[in-house]
Amino acid sequence: MLVRKIEKYLIEWKNNPDKNPLIIKGCRQCGKTYSVLDFAKKNYKHTIYINFFENPSYTSIFDSSLNIDDITMYITGLLGDKAIFEKNKTCLILDELQECPNARTSLKFFKIDGRYDVICTGSLLGIKGYKDNIVSVPVGYETEIEMKPLDFEEFLWANGINENIINKLKESYDNLTPVVDVIHNRLRELLLQYIVVGGMPAVVNEFVKTHQMNKVLRMQRDIINGYRDDMIKYASKEDKAHIRECFDSIPKQLSKENKKFQYSTIKKGGTAGKYLGSLQWIEDAGFICRCYNLNITELPLAGNADENIFKVYMADIGLFVSMLEDGTQSDILRGSLLGYKGAIFENLVADFLNKMGRKLYYFHKDSGLEIDFIIRYKGECTLLECKSTNGNTKSAKTVLKNHDKYHVNNLIKLGDYNIGRNDNITTLPLYLGFLIREL
Image (cartoon, rainbow, N blue to C red; front, side):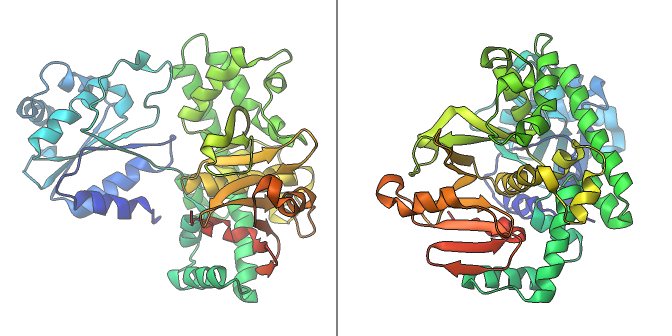
């Protein structure tokens, strides 16, 4: 059974006496339903589960009265003994909330009533074209959080790396002392596996159980095809084809030397006017994350970002690799990344940062100067580069040398080496990227 970080959050939520109904959104198949059901069954006397996608007729529960006694009456009438409402001991789970807008409106009344805890999940909440976005959102009466696929630390847990080893890694990271060889080599191996497997729970389970990469790849491509089906099913008619074209262009976008997202790469003559809304749809669905170019390398990063210039990464590294040609997984596991090396390393770091909830930024100038990522770290604007052992950091060194112009003091360099520090450059093995959390 996979251990997910959201479990800790759910316990804290339950113990809050003034909690709102909870909405957990996230891309399809990232583990929302399993985690919520597992939590509810462990922490409540009664769990009531309603899936609006599997049972469309259940939406009628919320069609007329939103009085809580009426709603509970309708639910017990439909589910019988499967639905027991007891004050402070029942958790009502509303799955695929986007299928029943009125159920979301009812959350205000569940909050005011206060007898029952409510957790909702949804994959396509609020995206353009879905149900025409006709829903009354109970502002102030709900708490919304986003769940993502497994991050690298959760992947390590799934592969038997216990807290003692994680603590050793954190100790080496904090003290900038090399990781001992036996752990270092094992983590390098697990990182390559994470690159090809990623963090979709069903895929990780299959990998841990069988280690058969053909099954892993088949499951990943099924998920990708499911995403494409969602684009056809849920997007507005005028956007359907453009959304698919945007999504399928991502590997090509990242294979370019200049990885800035270009609409002309989607289709010759493509423009922002034609594709910008489609790209936003894909991002809102949780399939991708954007990395914005900075005008200047100064805090606050969001205030200095150019929203019109950006790179696009897949939100899960394993799904990105599954979109590449056959044989890529084998190449990566053998340590041979070849032409896609830069794209894979960059998407890996984007995966790390995105899954810890960071916004993504980079720095590019027409002169050719480019920094892979810029982050806020320990209260400072910090360069973050992902390179091979002898990767070129000419741009980063130019920025560091010209402090009066760029106002940056430190570089973190991620690559296939151990921990080290030389002046204002910290080198870290790529697998420690998941620890770069301190703001």
